Length: 287
Image 1 (cartoon, one colour):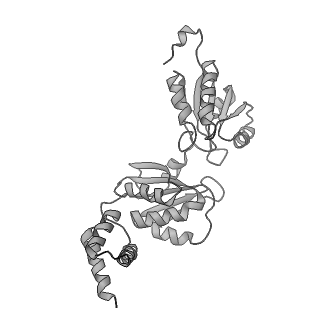
Image 2 (cartoon, one colour):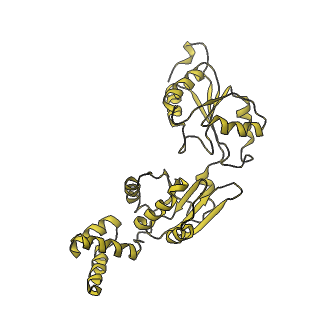
Image 3 (tube, rainbow, N blue to C red):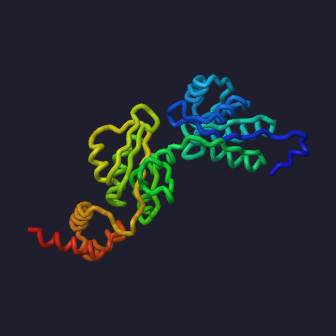
């Protein structure tokens, strides 16, 4: 940490301020006080944050801080803090640095000996989790799943034995693909899809993953989405129809029943003897 005693001045404070997910009233009195008193607010999208500030009659200057300028802007903000400027960091919604820009700034501020004060408030993951009815005593937050199918499936594979409740953020145009992969790789677990939380069209869809896939159907999903998936119970929940489809595909590639059991057992964490049985049944009914 830097010795500020030698410079004759104390550095400013970096406030990490949680802002509303959507409803502009979902902000604490303390957060409003900080936003009104700091020297500058570093915002992910200054136009978006300006709406919040106007609503609460706050006139603090804004500067942009987002994923595309984070590397260079973080050092600039730390320099301001070193010159006795107080800065509030906000994201477009919820708590900064949680699947949002901010981590780099926090790390650099810590290295520079800057005091950091979190101002608690809204967070989509805890708001949704509290209303799911799924276990909340132990959970794991995975942020956004990878956009590309191969990487997404690889990530899900690493989570198939995770017993804690799983929390994901997802872009609306990728929700259907993500649910299909979850259904195939993690099984037909209990799940909740929450969209537009704290907005007029807030919606919670509850049920097994397969049911959610059917409920969404061909409809376009709109708004920010949070997915909560039940943890592993220790028993494979992979749909047998999925296994049968995989078995047919592998047979078409010339694999023997024993080889199929090895491949799919490893892929799905499913008992190899049960896959072997399914594969043999398929042979018996084949013409």
